[in-house]
Length: 326
Image (cartoon, rainbow, N blue to C red; front, side, top):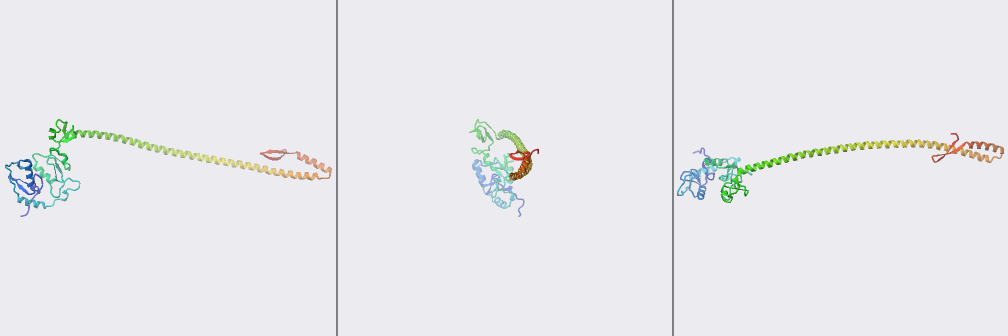
């Protein structure tokens, strides 16, 4: 006969929420993993069905359900979508066997994490008393009291520790305790105050940063303006010095040209005077050898009158002869 409408959820243990392993059936007709129901009865000391709560006395013998075992083996061979499997960083489903699926929720009561399929089975078993579920987390052990194996729901302000209800009756008796939700609310308010303080400091620092940047830009602009003004002033000063130097050089050259021209004129006149004197000296020398007394006296008188009209003048440390009346 063909297999029609078989679902894995119909063959899962309500204790471990996984496919039945070595399935056994209680007298009330419900089936469980042999190990799950055996361990549960050993721990509780009460022989009851986890689903219908029917109690058995004495402890019933559990026989393997071979028909269910065969069906379960067939279900295990079915392939599941690859994207349902847990990967790196994912929380694994505690109820899955073999390759684990990704957990979508964690139960703080059962201390297990469940994939979507096992979560639906878990919810169907606890419809009357819903368990406390949270987002899938790998830190479930941190939410359970290590002393009493109970859910941590209380915060002890005296010892600054998370505790369970039983801790308040024992080690933390008469301590200042509040619910974790109440402590979270207070700490959340404190966190908001700190955030507000940080935001104010950030705004102030951003304002300071903006002002500092403006000051830096202002200094840069002022320095650039000072450099440009300095370059302009020194450029004008250099041009003025060059212009004054050029004018002074030209003036010196003009004065030199004028002085040289005058000196050359005077040199020429001096040379002319010297030549005239030499010529007169030669004439006097010749006259001194004249034998004719009358001729000597006449020429002597003429030369004397001519020499009397010549004057010697000093000029610029040079001795220049000028004719009288010039």
